[in-house]
Length: 199
Image 1 (spheres, rainbow, N blue to C red):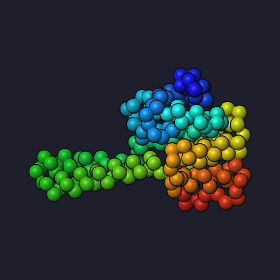
Image 2 (image 1 turned 180 degrees about the horizontal axis):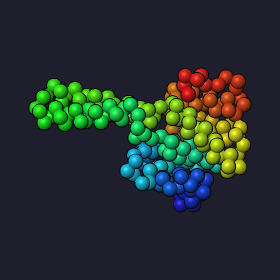
Image 3 (image 1 turned 45 degrees about the vertical axis):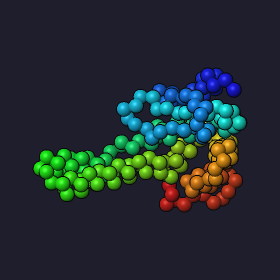
Image 4 (image 1 turned 90 degrees about the vertical axis):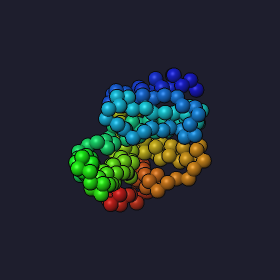
């Protein structure tokens, strides 16, 4: 597989927002098929690294749905969208500065601890199951504009999750198992969907 040709093909599959906000690069030394980092608002081109040696072992529809899921996750996961944890982080930082200026070590430690806890929660939310499920549904929606039916797209993404785990020599994690159950439901392969508490 020629990585340059495949990158061009993947750019055609992506929605316009994905092409503007991401950059696909070859990373043959990585042990995973595809990887990316949590999105940062000041980074113009969010990197998507692909090991094309492993990538080529997926079918084209699987590759299409995996890239669409990754791009959807990057564009929908916004750890800097204003919410409670951003407010706590800001309050902790301001508190730490004030306590540091006043020389109150205990106050400084408490404020810094508050900020650390809030930042950890922001990171966890960006990697949450709800975000992954939303990215799956967004990927399926975009795939329908690329000629797939909802059922086909869900089936290809489901098979891709299992194929990637096999290629990487890992077992499915909890979030992946829940995603697979949701995709089985969307593909019409199971009547049991994902409980609303996970969505």
